[in-house]
Image 1 (cartoon, rainbow, N blue to C red):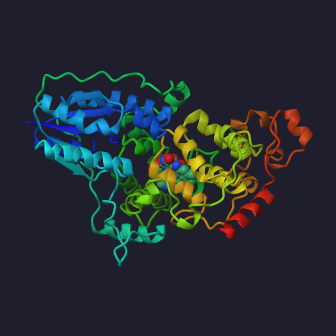
Image 2 (spheres, rainbow, N blue to C red):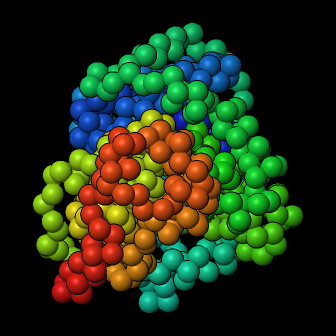
Image 3 (cartoon, rainbow, N blue to C red):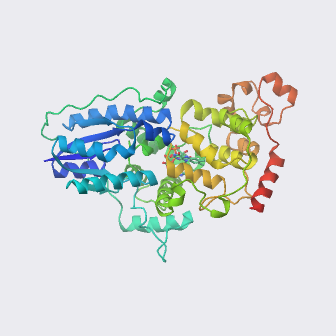
Length: 470
Ligand code: FAD
């Protein structure tokens, strides 16, 4: 009999739980829903939608080698999903459907509606844990609640990993041909702009590209990760976030590669390996937070006392921040990097986020939305977690009085200014010494670079006073 496998952010054939399980039950047909209206509502970046399409093309080839057809169905909205999937299942007399769970509130509602519709139609619907190492809601404190502090969560995750390390599954084997054609993958989806070749070259599609990057990272960069991970001027991190967010690679594949590098250890051993696994566990933590504290997924501050915080209304400041024209070099370099490449270094995500919600006192939700609209790795849990961390409104966030100074951070993490010079051509003629010095208004005008829109010291004090008041 035929088993449908509904693919979403799990665009790979290797170690894909739902796909593997479906292949163990019979003949598989894969299906993917194109839902432009929902994607627009969720502010999905054009670069990310383009990445999905490019990965679907690669995936269709991989599936084709296994005689698994890939059907594409376009509907407007996720609320159309139950009807579209039932119709497809009935048209091919499929007996069941499998998919891997996703964790935003809308995703959960969508999936429940689909599961209910299948139950009503007397069709079997199988759901799997795949995006995370552990089912969200199963790593709990003694009193049975979700952790609010990352280090305690990690401790629990370590002991769960010691008890049982989740294994990677193989790709499905080649099945008997079904004589059903795969649907062509479109070049574009309406409402989403074309994407630059720069972005397409930086983020090549397909699980082979992801595996190559993982191998390069573990063989050459992981050793020094602990020392280089905070340096935006060095290619020191894995740059796998886009692949993880769209499921072109699995977290288990990453974990096993790191453990391999670390001679079998994950909480001890080489500092690079331990530190990278720590980041994979931050990813895990924020996904668990999303499920266990549903108000976070609905866009509210984790800490209720900040829900009605008196943020500044400053459309000009917001626009300067968005376009990389604040007059603070490291902030502008970072924002321009994101606009041009769809990605921003983690240290810079923290700096730019804190600059927006502390120095400019603008609502973190504005920043969260802008990031989502431009990141190729945009992920609700990680993005929201990062923003609430920076805004001091989150679970385990930076205390409100800890405000990064972008100028000193730039000196520390981009010591010779090469990152700034790369992204802010107005400053490219400045020497490594000059680039971190405050420049006179006349010199800035001469270089054609904006005057700083805020005084860093005064705006820091303003933020601390406002947060203390709340
Ligand atoms: P590496 O350093 O190689 O880390 C490996 C993987 O671990 C990453 O690919 C990612 O999946 C995960 N990871 C690393 N750091 C974090 C973290 N702090 N939180 C959650 N997961 C993490 N990450 C996203 O994947 N999508 C987002 O939309 C996103 N938005 C962010 C917004 C803000 C304000 C902040 C401060 C951080 C955000 N992050 C986000 C986390 C982090 O910045 C990126 O995951 C990282 O920069 C991606 O680069 P990399 O793959 O080279 O990371």
